[in-house]
Image (cartoon, rainbow, N blue to C red; front, side):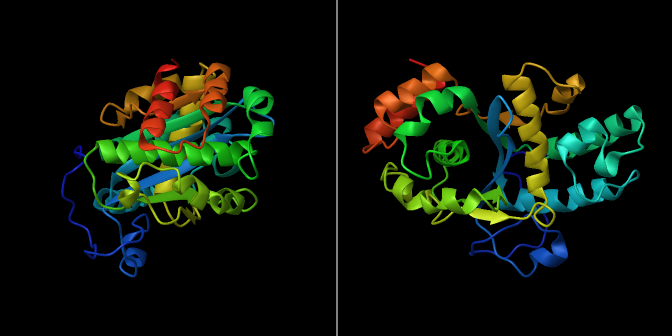
Length: 291
């Protein structure tokens, strides 16, 4: 069974409030939700050539049901308590001792669990050496750190994606916890928020949220997507090449961005802090098309 992006879901959800949905049902009954949620995890960074953040975007009802289905899939044999794509690929941690065929079948079932819900996927990737040479010294703290730069680029891309889908209510954006870099990135959010197109500012979250992926289960799905996009889109390889075939129902956003050297230079030339709606639109147009 597949689920359209706007399909109704028969799960327990309070209406008219705002918070999170990625908890299994018993925990969710104590929480409140926004209509649309953007769930983000990162892959790569120090010691890597590229850094990438990937998001799953969907209705809160779908995220809520996905959390339950994901937990069910994790609990099926061979049982995995917390999904980490890097551990699955290397058959380490909870995956240690599994045969390659067992690993592949488990990952395949988890990928198809994501795909059932018709989420949109969005990614922002960046070449780290190019960032250090071209951008890092031009940005004030904390935007002089690659994580913060990709973090805020992701928020801007997510805003445009949600706005272009016709949403006019505030959405949630939830990042995997990053104790060292997350608080610093969030500290710059009011500055970046002030540069947003006034026409879209009403749907932008008041503050990005960080959650533990052991408890907020859609982040584990975003982890699978982030690791895979980094390998497929940027490194042009993947140790599980069949994985892409599992996502026929997952819609890729046209606003995904690869910040290579040329585009990073263009960002600096145009100023990352766009001051007007027209500038912000041109900024994203240049990122997408490289012109």
